[in-house]
Image (cartoon, rainbow, N blue to C red; front, top):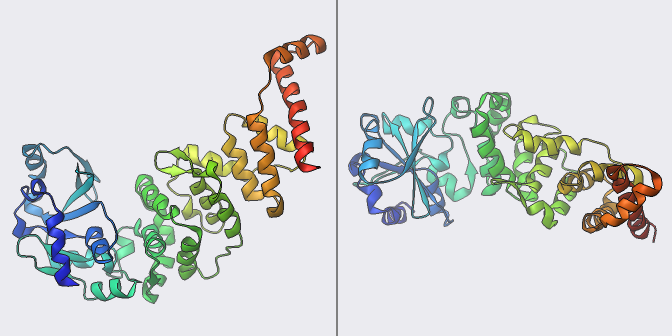
Amino acid sequence: MEKDLRNIVLLIPQRIKNLFNLGRTYLVGGAIRDFLLQKAFFDFDFVIPKDEFAFVSAKLENENLKYILLNREMFPLYRVFLDHFTFDFTYYEDIESDVQKRDFTINAIYLNLGNLEIISHPSSFDDIKNGLLRVCSGNSIKDDPVRFMRAFRFLSQYQLKIEENTKNIIKDSKDLYFGVKRERARVELLKFLKNNTDNIKNALMQVFDDFDFSFASRIRYGENLPELQKNLNKDSKYIDLLKAYFLRCKYPQFLFGLTEKELEYIKFMDVMVGADFKSLFEAFYRKKNKFEFLLLNIVANFDEEEIKKYIEVVRAWRKTKIKFSEVEMFARVNNISISDAYKEVLKGEFKKIYENICHS
C-alpha cells in the first residue's frame, strides 16, 4: 500500500511542484486517503515549513496562479484552483508533532514530495484497511470542533466503523461545535447531508445509539421527488433541508451553519398544515411562488399513506392557470378587488382538483 502511494506524485502538475522545496514539502490528507481507497478525488493538501509560508503568495504570483487566503487567524490556508483540481497549502513546524494535530488517522499520512518518504500516525494504514475512524489524539476534536461534524461525514461517506474512544470523544464534544465559525460548520454539515439516508443513519447511530430514526421512510420518499433534488442554493438542495429538519429534533447541531433562507424552510415544516382543503389551500396560496415550502411540509408531516395523494394535488394546483378575463368578471359581479377576485377564482378551480383527487 505504501509503495503504491508514491504514484500519486505523478498526478501533481509541475506548476505546483515548482512552487516549493520538494524535500521539505509533504502531501497529506484526503488525496492520499482517497487514492488508497481507490476513490476519485479533486483536492490536494500540502504542508510546507513555517519559515517558507510567508513567501507563498509571492511564489503563486510568480507562477501566475490565482489563489485565495482562508482562515487568516486560526488556520491560514492558501487555495489554488488549477486543471479542475484544488490545491491547499498550510504550514508545519515539526512533522512528527503535526501528525498528532491531524483530525483522524485516515487523514494523517504524509508523503514527502522530494524523497517520497512516508510519515504517518501508527494506526493510519491499518485504519484505512479496516475502515475504522479514529482520532489522532484525545484533543483532536477540542482543538478544532468542526471535526465533530466531519466525523459524521466520514462515517457516512466512507461507511466506516468508529473506534470506541473516538465515539466517546465525539459525544462529549457536541456542545463545542457551536463555537465553530458558521461558514466552516456549513461546509461540513452540507457534505454530511449529501449522503443517503441509510449511511446517515448508520453514522449517527454508531455515536448516538438512542437516535430515533422512525422518520427515515419520509426522507427516502423525499429523495425520490425530483422537485426536492433541485438546488436551493449553489451548495444545498431542498432534500438536504428535509434531512436537517429531522436530525435537529434530537441534536440542534444538525442545523448549525444553515443560512437564514434555508432556516425559513425548516421553520415552515414546523407549521401545522391540515389535509383539509381550506388549510391546504391557504398554505399553498401563502407560499404560491415557493412551491417547495409546501412540498417539504407534506413529506415531513402528512400521514405517510396519503403523502402521494396530496403531492398530486399540489402539483396539479401548481400547473393551474387562471384567465385574467375570468378574474375581472368575478370582481365586477361581486364588487371586490382584483386581488380578492383572483384568490376566489383560484380557490374554486383548486377545490375541483382537490375533490377529484381526494374523493374520487
